Amino acid sequence: MDIKELLKKAVEKKAADIFIVAGQPVTIKVFNQLETIDDQRLLPDDTYHMIKDIYALAANRSDAKLREKGDDDFSFSVGGLSRFRISTYKQRGSYAAVIRVISFDLPKPIDIGISQDIIELVNIKKGLILVSGPAGTGKSTTQACMIDYINKTQSKHIITLEDPIEHLHSHNRSIVSQREISLDSDSYINALRAALRQAPDIILLGEMRDYETINIALTAAETGHTVISTLHTLGAATTIDRIIDVFPANQQHQVALQLSMTLETVISQQLVPTINGELIPVFEVMTATPAIRNMIRENKVHQIDGIIASSANAKMISMDNSLLKLYKEGTITKETALLYSANQELMKRKLNI
Image 1: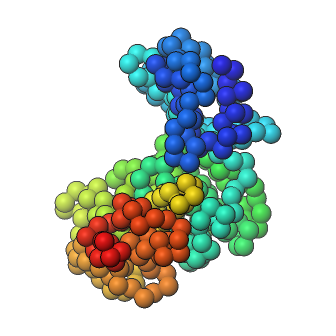
Image 2 (image 1 turned 90 degrees about the vertical axis):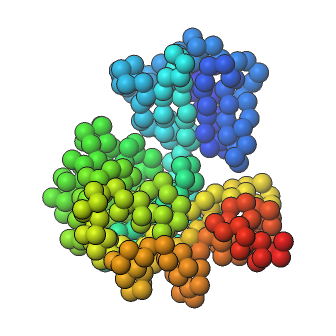
């Protein structure tokens, strides 16, 4: 199958992902459902040639990393069609790929279920904003919408460090420097250290992956920058615990103190199916009130969920209350609200099940 034709067909069908795996027909994911493009099962030779064509399409990128390391991540654009994020890998001795379809145009947040209240959480002078959630739940899109909002409304220097770059930003009121790890810098750590010498106001860090990255990100937030990043966790308390637990035991108290001063917001998100079969994001939002900062300092992070659930603050809402709101609005079913809830027993009572 011609790779350009495949990409065109996926875009026309509004697919989120394309799967090229030996033993299976080419498959796309549309509204969280898998659909095969045709009935022809791919042989290892088929996937090999398709993936070689993908590398050729990506400005003749070398496939040395795939051959040597067993996997590779990159992105490229096809003029007049779309942008694509590629993850190639070896499985059972054959080549495979998963391709994420990314629109050239940033979506309007309201059109994809992200309220303006979520976007405006980025209106802080300094500190750490974390967007958390499982893989594939739209964290990168939420971040991109935040960067786009700053770009259009404020005069800032924004530096994004991504692996790979997904959404492209043109300069508007702000200057946007987008750096791709492995292409523009050899690691997140080196890029982040360098960013601190490049007069940034906003630093978007694609992912807080390890001890060193988290340590530098906290320092950047502490020294007057706004740092936006992601973790693959769900829920504010779990996210905070994950950051602290990355550090050695003898440093965790100091890190908790540092986090209590720098953390501004944790946004956790999931994608849930609507009654109409589409997928929309649902959010938990924690803003760092004095009470929450105190809990982080005093190792009482487990109490944060209760504060969020009972909060009347407009900038604080639990995942379960967000799901309940969507159910009452008729957007999702009772079963969906229960399935995606954090506390199913409590949700059953709220739903009168």
